[in-house]
Image 1 (cartoon, rainbow, N blue to C red):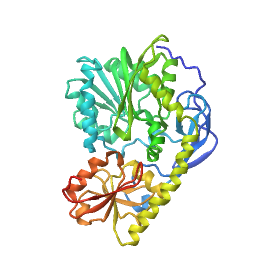
Image 2 (cartoon, helix red, strand yellow):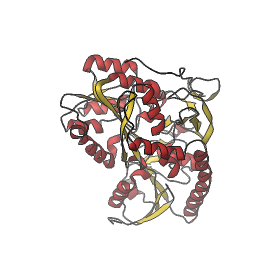
Image 3 (tube, rainbow, N blue to C red):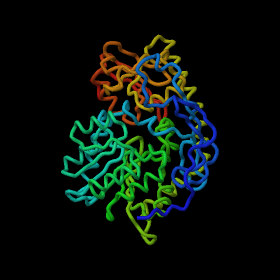
Image 4 (cartoon, rainbow, N blue to C red):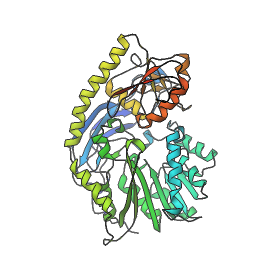
Length: 442
């Protein structure tokens, strides 16, 4: 199918270098990643921050860690919110990547429910190919394999792709682009479905990614993309969803406009609880006469109510007050001689801590269940990442749960580990403190 794009090519590489590591630079962009339209002024700035998922192994490595602008701007044409600067994708996805999807039982349950839908609701037949882009350690594809589906993962982080392959999930170690799509087509044939769980936000050139995916689809195939809805980021103040690995903050309106320009249409949308509120968007080939589902129209209206720069600017204003309150709370805990720790060294932790300006002098350590994160440091804050058992050997009085989106899951884990009552802080969407007792259910 021939590309029908109307706009000029994207212009990522501009003339202002604003940060660097080795030969890599962050550069201001002017072309929207989806439609090529002009970007407006910065609507939200979180300052200069380190790359959230590059966890240093030593304090020497952590010293002088490069920081890059973390700014959001809005496309003046299609309304897509996106980072105002560009860092190459291989700065995020490489052979030392530290995020493992399988570390969360909440995500396992989500994948299991998702996989149950493919045969009955999405009409994927035995033998038809399902490709997941950004497949990580294969959690989603493993759930599909349990239903006897033919699957293939595409994962750019080499160490994570190895984990998936060792677990019996066929996975290509590559970035997904036109070349990768052509290689898959030649070897495996067209895909009935292309899944992107949180992957679409991680793509620096959204248009080219979607065109490659479209051309890999069978004629009756479909995309199934899940992403945190930017309306939730604004209304629920999930500012820590903004980090360098997330190039875009997606909405239905920009995607529907892209789909219509390129021979596709959004045919269904489902709300999902993941990441504090996500959308699952299904896109198929279509013509101009294909009707727009009512839910698409409804969500676009919700987006237009918070469109433009104003809501992002309001989030930044709220953030200043939240920051002062959180810093004062931690200072009071420390002044009272209470030990503060963290749980979940997620990207959210990096963004929260660097936005707050907290370091290892404020938070003694952070626990994480992932072995590949343990023994490292949270970038910019220099906080040690330890196994969960540290909560017993070095018990804190206060625990900040950085992965607030799975707060209930983590609270249950903490109950099973702690040996004395602790105060547990959930930082967003507002600051809440829960008193947690060992083995308690509430």
